Length: 419
Ligand SMILES: CC(C)[C@H](C(=O)O)[C@@H](O)C(=O)O
Ligand code: SF4
Image (cartoon, rainbow, N blue to C red; front, side):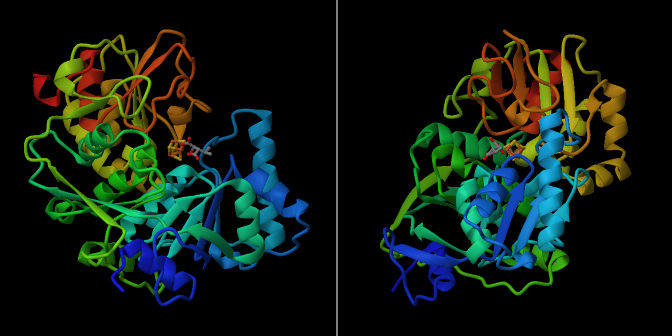
């Protein structure tokens, strides 16, 4: 039977020859990730169901990223609960406060390979689909069951495949592509679907750019965001992981497959406007909007290429006196490489604040919150009311290049217009 890549992975994981969209399967979990914010509830539920030992400590990854270093007594207590769990269960894959955002660190450290089923107690776990895995966010209580049994049930999703063609114009990035798609499809337009990103534009993209696409699949309701593995994926994975992998691809005549064609050759930089991610406009329509803060970072756009794009614009320029700019590398590896390349010097000289790798103000729980009436331009993935602090603040979302150009001007600016 013809199947999509997601169906093939779920069939393989549940010991079936074939599965169909809509069917319920019980799948073996390859990687189970939890973090400092949602982990304590999983641990509590695990104890409540009287589970004693986790099914396989090697398949569990625990990472602290949302509130690091601890910014409250409650956060410190959460860290203690998780450190204790890790110790008791003998979990070796543990990243304490220093490593960065889960969705960057897991791929970087080789925890994810093509063909796997990856679950995490975080909605942006879909990011890992960029490596050809079926990756999805689950609830903390579901995770307790995964910890205990190594299995989880899934309804096999239908697939919505975006066939993306055309070369990206200057100043246009993966972020613009995915914002444009979300603007067209709507925040609930792909609910419970496997969003598949394909076509020549995706083939041209680096693995890190593909992660931007997969990362935002959840913002249109997607169950996962997946890219079929190719040589770039294999190269990325072989450099970082010794795990065996399986390459699955979509059969074009799979019954559950819907295809949407997207041509990006004329695309302008895109901005998602308050207070919904699908309120997407070309930058020219919002150019000149005054901003108070720029946040360059997160699991969407805190990677080395984003820091490079921003530094390219900030070099020999200054962040506007009216703007606070926060630069938060997505991981320690990104931080380290940015240091080596001299990018951090550029940010500091421009007047930006560089923080330790973490989620930062992305979900309004840690550093750099907004006050009432303030406006933020952020490279992250959500702009709901109150997302980065005050419910009376406004959050716009963009690429790293638009964020950097706007930081210089103090208002939303097309990167071509900074001279
Ligand atoms: C804290 C966590 C539950 C949450 C998520 O699931 O996505 C966060 O990472 C976010 O981005 O809103
Ligand atoms: S960076 Fe933002 S979106 Fe990503 S995991 Fe952290 S809080 Fe969630």
